[in-house]
Length: 359
Image 1 (cartoon, helix red, strand yellow):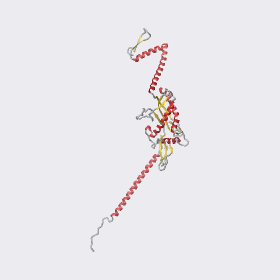
Image 2 (cartoon, one colour):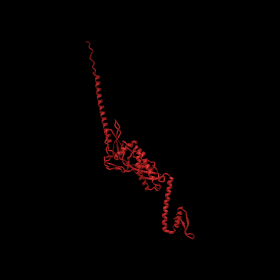
Image 3 (cartoon, helix red, strand yellow):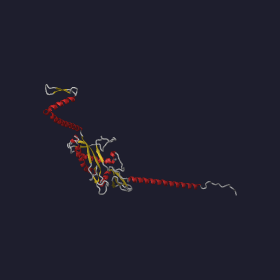
Image 4 (cartoon, rainbow, N blue to C red):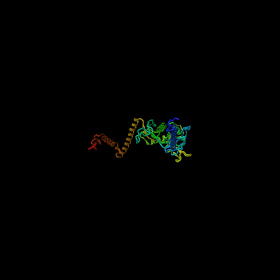
């Protein structure tokens, strides 16, 4: 039998099988790594969700009220579920969200835009003055401010949520701030309602006083206007909001039991919105200048009356004569020239004014 030499032996008799085994090992490792990554991502997601839930369920800030609403996701509603008061925990469900509005004392300032704070920013909510008319029909500008807060009665706050919805004045961020330390929607709500209501009550109130309110800036008349504005405001604002209940109350309004706001049988004492009138000026500059001149004339008249009374005690029946002499002397001094006055007629001694030495 022929010999063909030694048979050839391959170093790896099963190269294909080995490749398959290595590939399967790599796939198993890749699968394990993928599962590990997915597990880590899932844990991170759960942690973030937990953190978010904790944040959403944090106590409402002491200056804020919260509206708990449906989130509108996966068939959930978007209705108002309940109201949460300052420092209360909202206890949100997974299908709920919360929106915040200021529940502390606020103000609304109307001025001419010339006032600035220490940062150089304009002070005030509106920089167009209120125009009103006195009892004589004189047009005047009014500078005013008001102090108020939301009515925290549950029914009133529920109405305010509906009213506020148009302006998007409730925010998801409990620390939301901007111009006038409020959100854009909040400022829009005030601009459309609080400002015009203030104008209307000022118009009603200023017409009860005469022109001395701007001629003499009578503080008593200022206070009277402010009181009348406060008395008229609630009704005017109800007409604007369309609700019979007051959505806005005066600063100092509070719960009967402050420790349990919103609880059953607890009541919120809603006071009148408080106003202050800082200044009233005539619209027409000519009128204002005439008033200044009239005021000066009145003061001069009062001074003359007192001067004549004092001279009467000194000079008796010759009071007018000696007052005339003193007026002539004062006129010469004011003119800065020398005058020679003959007191007592012909042959009377002459008096030089100013006297020698210029005194």
